[in-house]
Amino acid sequence: AEDGRIVIIAVQGGTKSEFNAGLVLRKRLTITGSTLRPRPVAFKAAIAQACLKHAWPLIENGSIKPVIHSTWKAVDSSEPTGS
Image (tube, rainbow, N blue to C red; front, side, top):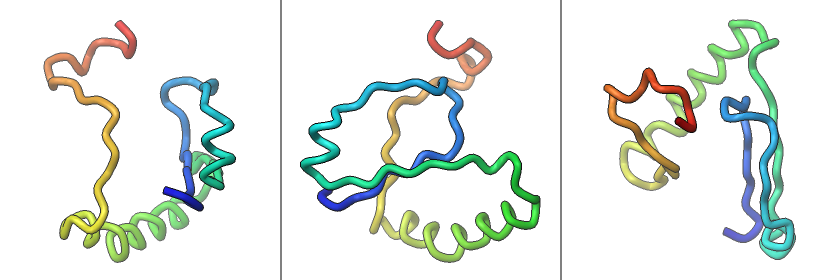
C-alpha cells in the first residue's frame, strides 16, 4: 500500500536483510523498529491489552489479515531454522 508502514519488533531470523529500496521510496513507506526486551513488564502488558482491544477484533472480523510468510508442522518445530 502507498504511504504504508513496516514495523519490525525484535528479530529472530538474524539482523541483516535485503529489500528493494526503490519500491520503498516509490510507495513512500515508513520503516520503523524496536525491541521490547528492555521494557518493563507493565509496558509490555499495556501493549498486549491495547492489541486485544483495538487490533484483535479487526483480525477476527476479517477487516485486516496477517501476512504469513511460512508455516511448519508441529513435528518439525524442533528443527533449527534453515535446515
